[in-house]
Length: 228
Image 1 (cartoon, one colour):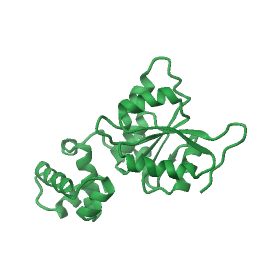
Image 2 (cartoon, helix red, strand yellow; image 1 turned 60 degrees about the vertical axis):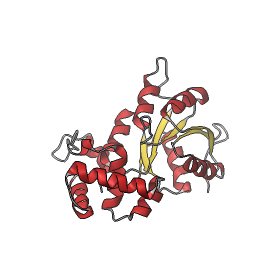
Image 3 (tube, helix red, strand yellow; image 1 turned 45 degrees about the vertical axis):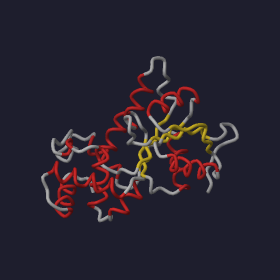
């Protein structure tokens, strides 16, 4: 796996934010094997991220969208809201299992320069990091359309909110999205780093909140809201 960095500038300094330690370890190992990037720090919560970013002053922050204490949008809000912060110095690249329109739009509006999903390869991630550092906007396939819709004024503009969708927690949306794509409970548990029992609990909650009776109705409901 290779990347590019000039001798003049040195490797791109990267800070990793994700609440799953195993995932952070995997990304750190991938990037450590690459030329052109250097992981200078990591965090597993919003509070740790804000403190770590202030301390290490990275050039690019890889930012998870969903974390127990707030997530990527909250990290962006706190870091960019600090008085005296050079807002143009640190670049944020969202790295998430979620590819939902509302998640993409929220972090881009918050100031992230790109959004890639966790299905990205190590080589592609290094390329995305160097590109956002250079000023490019980088998105996984199909996600750029969400951003264009959100910032357009035409009839296809993304809705500001959905009262029914707002009843669901972020984790319930993630489970619903994978369920609607045909994932089995065990596969959803593996993808989201949770237990099968927890998946079952989330599905039951979604069924109750949406007043639907089975996964086929849930799939149609999710598709109508562009979650799939």
